[in-house]
Each structure stands twice: as C-alpha cells, then as structure tokens.
Length: 266
Image (cartoon, rainbow, N blue to C red; front, side, top):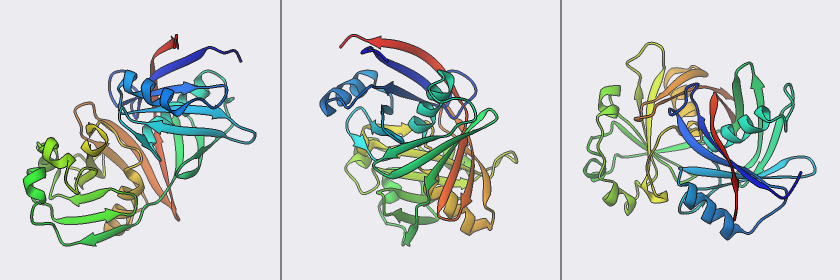
C-alpha cells in the first residue's frame, strides 16, 4: 500500500445507483487523528462514513455521522465490505471480520448479496407517551425502547408510515430523537415496512438503516413467529433488506453500488 488516502461513496441496500443509503468508505493504512475523521465525515456529509484500518486478524472500523461518532452502522458496514470485495482487498469466497465499538462483526458474501452478522437488540415495552404524537404526527399502537438508544413505535399500517411528517426540530430535543417506526407491509413482496428518524445525530431521516434491524427482526419474530423476513424501508430513496434471526444474532443481507472513488488531498 502507499500513503494515498482514497475515499469511496457507495449506495447501500440497493442494486441501483442513486437509491438506497449512501455511505462514505475510507480504507487507511494506519490509525489517524479522530478530528480528521470527523472533518472528512462532515465534508462528505452522508449519513455515515466508515473508516477502516487493517489489523493482525481483523479490520478496525469506526463510523462517523456529519456531527458525531456512532458505535454501529449497518449500511456503512455493508458499503465497506462491498468495496473490499470489489477491489480485491478481500478475495471472493473469503469473509471479513470487523472490530467495532459494538463488538465483532462478521461479513460474508452469498451470491450477489453481502451478509452482515449483527447483534440482536432486546426491546422493553412502555405505555405510549402522551406527547409522542405531537412530534411524530401519528398515534402509535405500541411504544418500546432498546438499551442502545432507539425509541421504537408500531403503527397500524404502511400508509400511515409513509405519510409521516415529523417535527424534526422539536424531535431532536425530545426523547424520540432516535426513532424507528414500523408497520406490516401492504405489499405482499415484503413482510414489514420501516422508516428511521435520527435528528439527534443530525440526520432527519436515514434512507436505509441496517442497524435498526437489530431491533426490528426480534420484534417481528415475536409478533409473527417467523425468523426470516424481507424488509422494505419506505424512505424517499427506499431500500430492501433480507433479514433473519439466528439466536442472539441478526443476519442482514443487502446489495450495494459504488458511485465514485476519489483521492483525498488533505
């Protein structure tokens, strides 16, 4: 390797360019200053940028939004693996091991789909807060929270999920600044639909959110008894994920498309 710093932008959880969720991917030779990573993420200004450093037995991966570091990001992990397979850093038929703040993440490839092995998140149900409808613009049927900061609500149907117009400025300062919204899908090709609002991290709506499925898959498993699902994230860009529950782990499968590659001068 040389000292050039190359950055990629990838659209994740889609097979078509300009759909899914864009992520930055920067593969480095060695550890760099955290402030530099924050500046690059702010400059690229996609929902997350992943920074990868090779190690002895695995790759260290860190994720930054334009405003802060986060412990786990599904679409940036998928995008990183996509680049590593596409560029030949990881040969076809081999797997990838990432060390993240959320623990060890194993990644494999199954045909044209990249498979992420993520932790399953437990949910605790609470009474629906009286004020949540003021922020969300709809009244949930159920309200839950994860130990990882997400608020989580169930709505009656997909039409209600698609029609949401949250008050993001107010939501950012509320207990609902990291919010997963789900409902059964009205399309027979999918099991459930989802939107994710993250104004607390400077992202009003995340186009496709792999890590949210750490909570979504156990939730829908308890609702339906099924362990395999096809999820439809119904944001403006949209995304499709194949997901399954495997004990205390969630497998999240998606596709990705490289949009551009650039050399950083600073």
